[in-house]
Image (tube, rainbow, N blue to C red; front, side, top):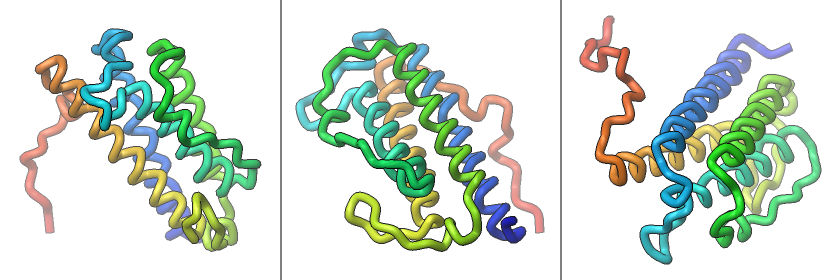
Length: 170
């Protein structure tokens, strides 16, 4: 059983992970198959590469390390792949990966959240892993949104039904 603080941390982290998946899907639905795999230059990744990278990273950190599952990640393939997945397949792979990670995070015990472990050469507790996964997913979601806006020249409407000019209370 988690303390109220740990429970709130887990719930907020899972919520933030779940917010980004529909944003990425919205971007993918607006891009063609070719645009998903287009690289603006040799030092940039395609949206397809970013999604493969997100799946690899989330699987390695949240599912493998936090969930105590063997790590089978081959990171360089996430960036060297130039095709081979359709938009639908990328969406399915991303959705399943995030769903598995959220389930792993929500099933964490307090001891698991505090346990230090070595992930990709970094010493992190379970809390550190969750922070990394949440931040990393948001970071690349922003890149995908930026690329989509640049290519399609349109607002993605992520906050269409929210008044972002409301002032804080108290």
